[in-house]
Image 1 (cartoon, helix red, strand yellow):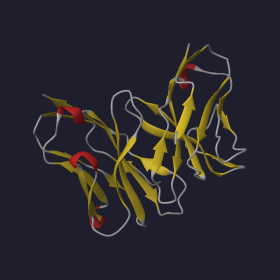
Image 2 (cartoon, chains in turn cyan, red):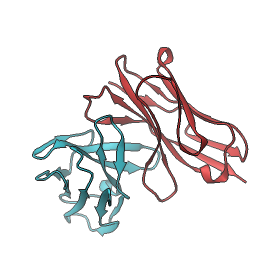
Image 3 (cartoon, chains in turn blue, orange):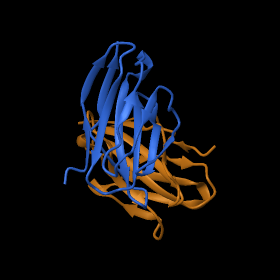
Length: 111
Length: 114
């Protein structure tokens, strides 16, 4: 089992460009999350999903969008990239008891 | 609003020293508690978890944590740290099993010198 797979691992964007971070899981978990991690700030929740077809905003959703058409996939779309979106992004799935399984992260730089 | 506080931002220890990292949360209801570790350049991994029962839980690599309900605390301990324990440690709380997302503390960076 691959667990949680994120792509790409690294990406450099110019201001105003758009891109999609892919996340796929083979754990059959209903809950999926996107976090961003900035130095000294911990993890901030961007969006989450409790199942296919259901998504909701987290703490810092502005500038991002998500979709959840299948249990396996939870892509994160960045529209009109800004320098403030330079960060490391983690996708995660969750068991019913709350244990999270993280992908390896996607490091995004916006110049 | 509910929050998780990790009071130590950066801890520096020598090998074989004992470790205790503080974690407090603000929520009066049922919680599930977690400690995650992030080694340099890697993603977060589960260190240990508490759902119910014995408030002293043991995790991987010799770590343990104690849940003290009256203090809303879940402190992480290790009797003797190793250089390989150098990492960032995050406390996280799930507000009852029906909760949707974990709330994370801001993390504590542990540096262990050999």
